[in-house]
Amino acid sequence: MGVTVLRLGHRHYRDQRLTTHVALTARALGAEKVILSGEKDEKIIGSVKDIAKRWGGDFEVEYEKNYRRIITNFHGVKVHLTMYGLRVQDKMKDIRGEKDVLLVLGSEKVPGDVYHMVDYNIAVGSQPHSEVAALAVFLHEYFRGKELEKVFGGAKIKVRPHECGKSFFTS
Ligand code: SAM
Image 1 (tube, rainbow, N blue to C red):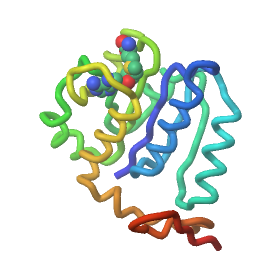
Image 2 (cartoon, rainbow, N blue to C red):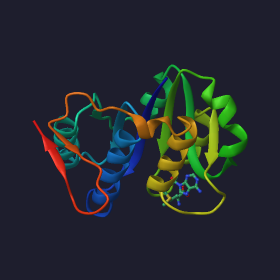
Image 3 (spheres, rainbow, N blue to C red):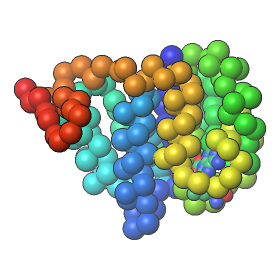
Image 4 (cartoon, rainbow, N blue to C red):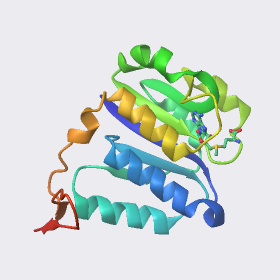
C-alpha cells in the first residue's frame, strides 16, 4: 500500500511553513511521496529532500504545476480531504481496500472540479481546521497506527527516545 500526497495551491509568501509541514508530516507518518503544486518553491523542495536524506527512508518530493494531470493519470484511489466530505470513520474501510492512494490537500479555496475528479471527498471532522491535522489523522487511520513503527532505513541521524532531554545517534 502506498500513499502519495498532492498539495494544491502553494503560495510562496503565505504557505511556506505549512507546505513544509505537509511534506514532513507525510514523510514521518508513512506516505511515500509528496507532489507540490501551485507556485514552485525550490527552497521547500530542497529542505524536505535534505531532511529525508539525513533522517532516512525513501521519501520523494516532486513539483507539478498541472495538478489536474496528476489526479487524472493516477492509478489507484483518489481521496480529497475537505471538511465538506463524507466522514473518514465511515469510509476508511473502503479506502483501505485499495492498494495505492492519492491524497489531495488544499490550501486556499479548492476549485470545484477537484471534488468531481476524485473517488472520495473525505472529512476529518466536519469543522474547518488544517491540512496538516487532516493529513495526520487520515494517515493514522489508514495505517491503523503502524506508521508509528516505521523504520527509516539509511538514516544519518536518529533520535534516541528519552524521558527527559535530547539524545541523538549519528552515523
Ligand atoms: N477554504 C478552503 C476551501 O474551501 O477549500 C479550505 C481551507 S483549509 C485551511 C485547507 C485545507 O485543509 C483544505 O483544502 C483541506 O484539504 C484541509 N482541511 C481543513 N479542514 C478539514 C477537515 N475538517 N477535513 C478534511 N480536510 C480538511
